[in-house]
Picture (tube, rainbow, N blue to C red):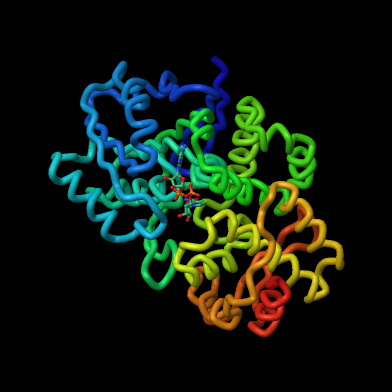
Length: 362
Ligand SMILES: NC(=O)c1ccc[n+]([C@@H]2O[C@H](COP(=O)([O-])OP(=O)(O)OC[C@H]3O[C@@H](n4cnc5c(N)ncnc54)[C@H](O)[C@@H]3O)[C@@H](O)[C@H]2O)c1
């Protein structure tokens, strides 16, 4: 059985991402599982599909398996769910030497990671991401957290997992819309600093859409490598790591404005990347073709590239002020000089942001 491995080397810890086509392969991390309680955190959608297979894979190494099933949805990535995890750990006497394990998409991975970061000032956790978005993005870099009613991911911590176990065959049950959402995050690496990856995606678009699992494993491994190259240089986002937020400041505002109900995260990111491209063109940083080229690539993967006119652009700009990338109301955004050449632009004025949003509405 072919497992691909991506090693992440950070200043104070190393861990690996194991990517397998057909199973939850814990063989290489068996030593991390022994003689401790394990709490698997999942949700009501993913647990019926994968909790039993996951437990079967773990039982060879550990028999002290507990599980907690939370409600499904970004709207439950909140303090109540986080409290539920902490209460569960308390009720089952979890201590510093025990282990948390996430089984689900990015919401479950982020919340479980944050509970692991906070319980007894930090306990170990392993990520088992089951959505494409979580496999290509949330699995690398140690950002954990929950939403606050005022905005997305406002509460959180950096906490690196012990390992990430990816079983790409879980993608078979992922709803098509969520799969596309993952592709939204996937395409960003091609736009930020890996133009050859945009080419690779184009060449393999059919296999990707048909969910060829061998190609999907390659895609996941490539994205994890691209992200790790950036994260290894800047773990805590004091510089270059911010590039990964291409389109995200717009996206977070869109998600907050629509109360996480209208757009998946990746859909919002795709639209946000078009806004960033439009802004780059408007500011004379990029040539006129940039937006069209970016839009065409997103449309090849059936991703949305425009927002309806009914969305109030002024309110979106206001919401963007609360983003963590905003310093003293001066907007710091990731813009593009060209495809594969993203950079951090400070002091972007709100009038220009508003204009870019308005030109991305129909
Ligand atoms: N930590 C990071 O670095 C990072 C990076 C990117 C995104 N995120 C976060 O990730 C979240 C988005 O993640 P997401 O898109 O995975 O959303 P999600 O976790 O809500 O998952 C999407 C939907 O797919 C379901 N699902 C997941 N795997 C499935 C499977 N194999 N089969 C059937 N259904 C499945 C989920 O239950 C959910 O209904 C956001 O909260 C975002 O902030 C974090």
